[in-house]
Length: 301
Ligand code: PAF
Image 1: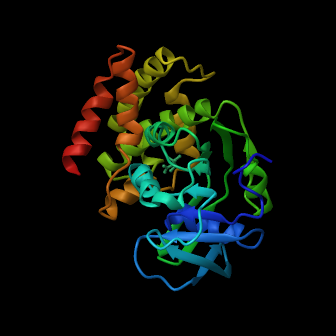
Image 2: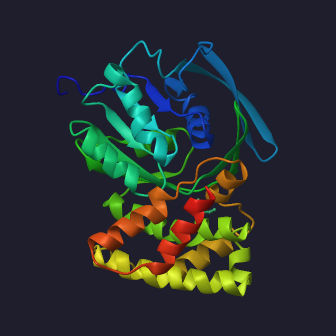
């Protein structure tokens, strides 16, 4: 083992108590030492979390601490904040985040991963693209609404078997290469579905039924195909076909962005549409429909 390499006996810290943070905390606590890092402030040393899946409900006790009160260095850390909070939340850990920590990034979109790679050049960084469906109806309760798969791959530093850990916790997971392709594949789906569900205030499946929404999705798809191709990504199908298939499969879902909009939370617009627009600019490709959608939703926020 190298001098400061994390040991498997190091606890796994989970940064962020949103739906994915609670899902991972409740699934992993039975198989390894978990510490949930909550917002700065006073928190009792343990919390009782409820995991609900269908009719089944389980109570799981998990250690927790405020981000400003961490006593030990977080050598193995799963980052479960929203994309726009991820870098600031890591910086907030200060000296409690060793420079060579092992990080697993769970964020949507592709912008926060790039920022974190640049800010922590010595860290061992993996990213995940997950299709698990979860929501948090109360601060200590998570509903595992739809089983999916979490694909994990290395972005920087040494390989760590995060997929094995998730599998031990009962979550389907696999190591993939290159993870950037999987992130881009999810990005194109999110860029076509999520902002439109906010604009039309509708479930994913309704985008396929409303002619105006479907036509917008098609235009967004053509632009996303051109941008991602210019950036070197190759896909067997078009963004539109892929997004239609996902919207049909998740027809009853309220997209994560529409959930944020309805709850009055900030939208992950920069990480998704904003990142696509950055790529478009970098490669000199026009993406006027994405730009107009970005401007409309940004103004609304
Ligand atoms: O962000 C989401 O809600 C999901 O990634 C997806 C695939 C659009 C399904 O709702």
